[in-house]
Length: 375
Image 1 (cartoon, rainbow, N blue to C red):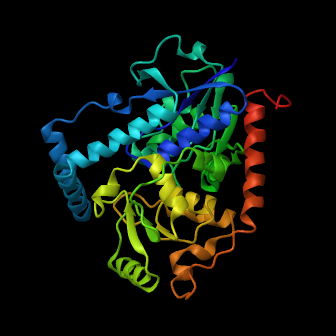
Image 2 (cartoon, rainbow, N blue to C red):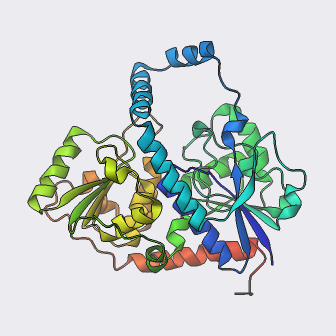
Image 3 (tube, rainbow, N blue to C red):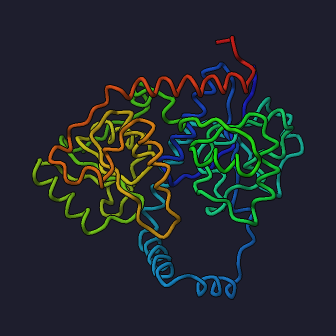
């Protein structure tokens, strides 16, 4: 039996990350392969800054960024226990559903025989090539493995332009991946500009699994309201949107449920299985999240997508690409805010698009993994 390794972001505080990791694993397992996700200790790559350097880095920030950083640090201090509890339940989900290695690697600690332990290595999905978030290392491009074993499955750059000091390495590393795909068109444009190569754009792995597959690992929430408006924001919620949330809640007699928000501490620590159930049972969903949008589409729920507000670089373009692919641009806030019937949404065309995209991704993987004709 062939053995496949996944290299991704091991983020135990992020629902989308855990669910895309699970989805990639399950798609590869469907070919009859043994699959493991290698634990990559990214923090081991970084030399801790001394107090003087930390202070200098802080003073170099813009005023708004200083305020946001202080607020974030203060929130972690006051809510450390609840944040750690959420990490604990997400790690438990990982233990239950994702096959991780019993060893870890880092830039300075890669087993000499790692390349021979697996038949292929897959990097992706998620923003594994985003240098602005500290990713896009040589490990994320699988440089430790023989070239013929390297596969990129729907990785994302998360940005529209690569910083100058990364270009030389990115050009070399990307050129050495024989089976190359990306998650967004902007990623394909970056690769074309850097290397002259064409790369196929594939859907996020979470879209590769059926609604029924996701429901099979969901966990019903005991105290879930009968009717509710689900709010899943990773950025700030403006005063205007807060007023709109309250308006819709009142007009349609819906309880407001916040996920991943300290506004709702009891639900801040739901695990990914409960996360799925909340999406599947919602009456309507408000989100600024890429994966929040995906699960709204998979479960065919009325939803509204908002631009994300915050200090990190904008990631709104990937949601725009997703909505365009499924012809659902009408669900953007700016396109729907004057619509009196926000619950009316047509999904009849979506399943056909999903099936076409799934087949395209499966063809890519069969070719890369040398299983064409076996399934």
